[in-house]
Length: 609
Ligand code: ARG
Image 1 (cartoon, protein in one colour):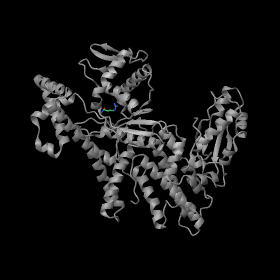
Image 2 (cartoon, rainbow, N blue to C red; image 1 turned 90 degrees about the horizontal axis):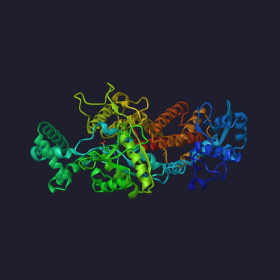
Image 3 (cartoon, rainbow, N blue to C red; image 1 turned 180 degrees about the vertical axis):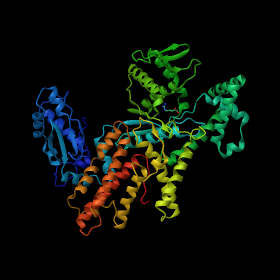
Image 4 (cartoon, helix red, strand yellow; image 1 turned 180 degrees about the horizontal axis):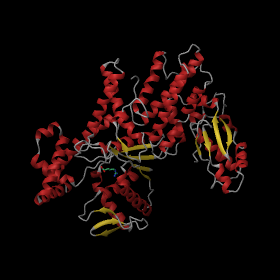
């Protein structure tokens, strides 16, 4: 791991702490350690192509961080590891040894333990969300890069169902994490609004529309019509022909068909927006497939002219000779009937993102079944951009597994239908309401309802985010809406509990005056909590780097546990104002990081529960 030296003007200017006048408190201690080790390596003239500091979080019994890079370096260069480790430690800069004690363990591992003044300085420096944000930006390679995050992207004319949950939830968390780390994030909803299904739908719309149903629940009616059209076309060849004609008319701009299509999209987007409102999602752009209709010609021309695409059985395709599968299974970028497809629009979309948004990265939050599509898209784009002298953005298929039912099959209703997202979120709120009625019966009904919404929706989001996104997970109401375990309710409750500590003492977690009298951290539980708090930057970096929000979930869960240990052992409301101030400050920082972390995941938080 070699990260940039933290650069943060705000912190450079920060001074007055006993640590030293000129030394800023690093936001991310792991980064600071890695930086120092790289400096030492230069000083000792170690071969930089072989040496890597490899700083990780340590088992708390051994320290805060460990650096594992010396041992493999010594082995490869045939030196005594322990002797090299001693040389490295002796050469560490004073700046770093002022922050932490260093010990050599085993054959040459280095253990770093943060000193109390470093913990204290960190708690002083990172006192609000702005400071955390500045710190994160200073420590992240993503800073100032343009990231297009492509997520949610349902198809119009259908309601969003449980299969659409993960992209929306994971995508939003990733967008927020990147934004917090200083990236310029563009949230783009690449809706599927131009499928061949519109032919059948328009056919049925013109013949079997139920005006009352349309007025009361239009999306339900469109879904019904689509099924009607589909069935009729299956059973009757002439219907199929007519439906094809409707599609051709739509594609050639027939005003009547365009108007119907527009109406279907408008209604769909309104329905999607209701879901997005509940999930706290706001897109910067909704540029669906239809937006790229007039932009696919350029793709065909350029890919043909550069020799990347060729005609095959009437279609335009790209083979990737170097790939074991894609050398025989090409990427079809134009169908044999001349129509654009998913690949054509995705290629046009990427060009647009590069040229119009100046994207440095495009993150595709799409389920793992589209792995081949993404791989072929990225391979094709890499060759195309290279041949046309364009900068290729970082391309990432941020894939995820399936939501399963208790039977380990994709989650469906009892009758085998897809569960509508609208209904799922409604049920979540209802179930949370039962929990709230039991635990918070003393609160006014209106507040209880609000708590139920936050806990219900938050539980669904959190249950999705706290798993490694690559794997499938089993959807379980009982586990997800529980006050025990790594759940939203547990964390939201921890937040509300800390807020109540402040309420009872009539203090504000945001006023630094309350902490002025704070003395040095003393008890083992105070110190353990402070050490955990200072790991937030490392957890954040480990979540943002590989775009894996579950790393942050686990950190927040552990932090809440550490807080419980502290709160059980150390009384906050005590007579000694100095002791109370320093414990209250720990409460305030725990609150800050729990709330910031939950908001980064897309959840809302509560002040009481
Ligand atoms: N509409 C597509 C689907 O439902 C997802 C689109 C994802 N984004 C993309 N650029 N391909 O499968």
